[in-house]
Length: 80
Image (tube, rainbow, N blue to C red):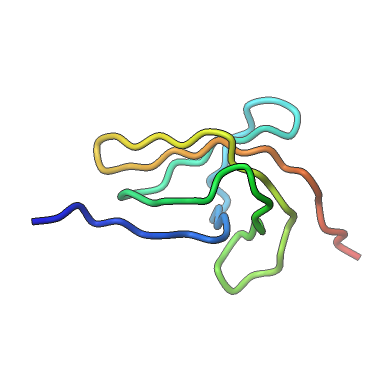
């Protein structure tokens, strides 16, 4: 039996991100997920939702069938 692994190319928060300080956030996701690090990724509340901004992941942790990502928001989209 292999370890289930999902590859993600955007950050989907579902409103569960936790602000660490300023533009730095933490987000816990179920299961093991792989994200590109240190590259700009779109941030959305839902997969089909509007782009909220662009962030870069600087730390990723896997343990107990969860993934925790730490990211910095680099740009916010205007809500006009």
